[in-house]
Length: 110
Length: 111
Image (tube, rainbow over all chains, first blue to last red; front, side, top):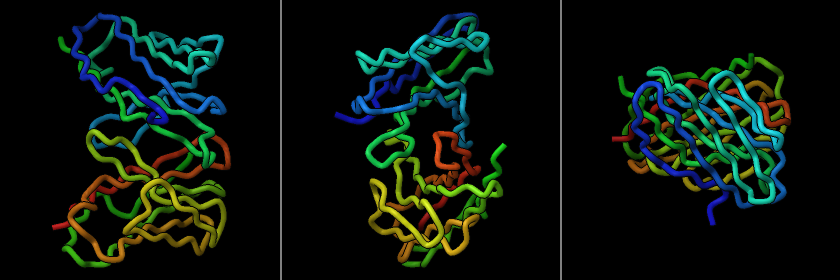
C-alpha cells in the first residue's frame, strides 16, 4: 500500500462548483497533515494544515480522520484561479520527512 | 518566508555528463532535501541531509550523490547523466519541523 494515496483526477468543474478531494495514508504514526497547491511548472506551496477538529480558510475546508487515516479538502465556490494540482502531504514517515501524494489535478472552467 | 534558491530553472545536458544541481537556503535550516517530480509518480525523495557533511538516502538514490559542505548549500550530483534522469528537481529546506520551503525547481533534460 502506498504511503499517501489520492485520486489523480483530473477534476473538471464549472466556476462556482463545490469540489472535494480525498486522501488516505498508511502510517498511523504520522504526525502532521497538509494540503499543498502546485501550479503548472512551479514549486509546491503550502495551502493549509489539516487538524482533527477540522479547519477552514475562506472557501477551503480541510478535515482529518485519524481512525480511518483519511484526509479531505473541500473547495466551495470554485474560481478559475483554483485550477492547480492539489497535493496531500503527511509528515512523520519512517524517515521523519514529508511524504507526498501524487496529486489531484483540478481544472475550473468558465 | 524561507528563501530557497536553485541555481538553474532549466538545464539541458548530454548523456554521460556529470551534472551539478545547486541549492542554497538563507534561513540557517538544518535539514535539506532533494526530490524529483515526474508525471504520474509525484514527488520522490532522492537524498536528504540533517547537518553539514551528513547525508541520508531517500527512496530513489540510485544514480545520484549529494554534497553538503556548508549548512546553507546542498548539491545534487548526477555522476553520469542518463535520459531517465530527465525530470523536475526540487530542493527543500526545513528547521527540523514539517515547515518546508521549496526552491523554484530545475527542469533537467538529458539528451
